[in-house]
Length: 214
Image (cartoon, rainbow, N blue to C red):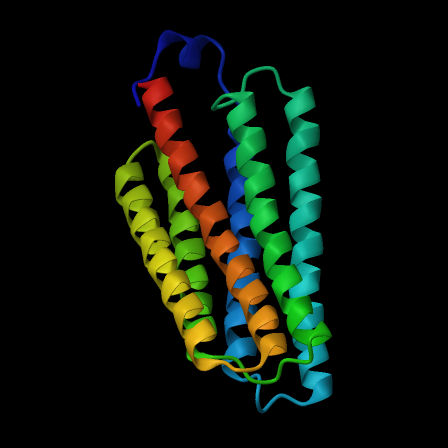
């Protein structure tokens, strides 16, 4: 991205990058909590499970607060570092990923799931990895370099999650004879894929920002 005269005459507020870093940091924290929860689901006591769920919910609430702060600041900022609609879209999609992750966690509690297939744990690993890559992407966007490296890897992870989703669906309907378990796990897989899709959408959005700013 090249520097133009407007950047010198009218400095743009860079606080939005700080907010995005905080927001993605919370998503990464929640992703790691979720990964640890599903990895140890069979051995967690009821109290330990409730504590895990409470920690993920707390992340979701912190993410909401940051998203609201970003929207408030948009109304009060004259010159933004990237287009306003792109800032708004990034904020709501990062927040959406957090919301879905919290929803998946709650489904595990509501459905009384205490054992998950290995593919759920694999999804959790992908979500941690793509959240970490998104954190790098925010830094890259702020510094205006290495953006393509981040977005390419994020898209690779999204393709990996797509393949895992299709594999999981095939195994679910082939190997499971209990229709209730099929319904429960199908919903989990769909939500987990949606978290990855939200992250990949951010990568595609940032690619568009690069094209617009040159």
